[in-house]
Image (tube, rainbow, N blue to C red; front, side):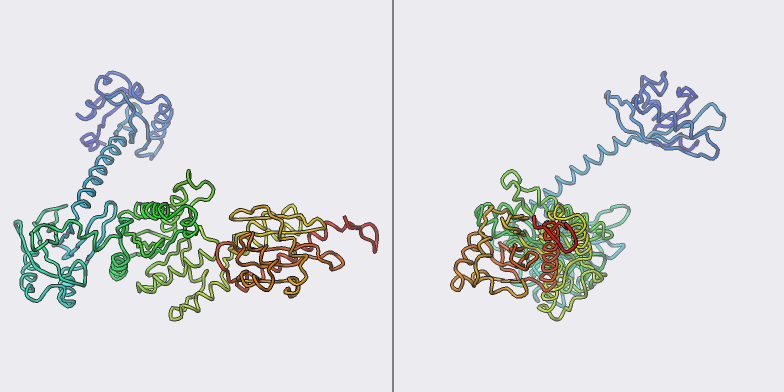
Length: 600
């Protein structure tokens, strides 16, 4: 423990009353005017018991050093959190104690982070591209800042970067010698250097730009490296093109990467190896949101969602806008599946919190699909396709969720046949968790009766990815409605049971129509019911009494989009309707004696 006395932290020897016996200079500075008082004097009262227990514990055989976190009074009259390390002196009278101020470290880290944020803002506002060359590692990195995001354009060994630039003719022929001189200077630079040449190294294609480059060598962490700025200049004026990055890399509305830039970033990240997740995301029911609240509000939603995903990804990747309400994220070094889930859950939760005062219960939601390099594929294009299909699964399962693709759970995709994969998802995908829950709720209805019907219908709305489920039953045709988007309370559905022409469309008590507009001229009365209730696609199953007469109907309605009902969805709906029919029938039939029954 003698070495501890000379530590940079306050450290000293205390007696059994916790009076300071001796210590290093930092210890006396730390105690200040309390040096003649027991240590208890400056310990927060509620922490005294924990400190005493730690002292007792350190005196146990082979206890070694015991650590405890307590609050101690500072010279500002406030309590800071300290990590206190206590070790017995083996003389039954004294102990050594070292104090590390956790609060001070946290405040210092907070100030450093604030300075970093300010520097990020400066680098972003400057609009320049930056580069570094680590000589010991022979690694070249070119990037630009977008506040929290560091957008890497290149990150590879210098020789490989030079070879790529030359092979793809990213430097104009007349400036080839200047470029090679620049590369040579990177390895030998001792003082500030300037170079100018033409190329499309930043844009990776298109008309060549005029570059102005400035760099110098520095020592960081005992390693020599070159740092510099890479500007695009206007040759007529000689001035920097301040908005160059925004014009070529950034989506003007959201200030995140545009489709071209996020694609290049994703390709580069995957080809560089390491851990990369490709994430596809869109805003649920965005067209309805636009139509209801107007395009100006829709634009605000897009910008707010972009800000959420940009801040969530931070320096661990990049976010881009690839369509109207469609986004793509590239997340690096996310850890395990739980780590990736944390990213996606944060996005989903924060998106749902947007504009709650304006929208109320009609809150914004998003659907997300993700794939992972090294697990799903090592090819960027395949990862994008898989993430896109995972997004489609999220939509099929009821939106407002994220799906991380797992082959054992979601099946093997046929990458060469896009249409087949989408059909397969539509026709067969329901998770094991969904189906287990479905069966458990069906069993509850069978065992405990119609009082358990509502949870089953709520789960069926989500699993079948529909907007509304309605059960009509009995002589009064009383209605139970479970809806994900609100129901007006209209009872027009009952008139369908009185429309004999419409009932002739049923086969085996089932009828399904993917576009109710088809009925407009052939069955105008039935069409009017669906039109007034906003129904675009529907599955229906008739309910019957003990004598086989019509007694009701179950309706599964889609109100936003035209919907193709997968075969499995049809089977699940039909089986559920038959069980509901049996349970409702059982509750109306009370046994009186053998061979007799009473209808209630």
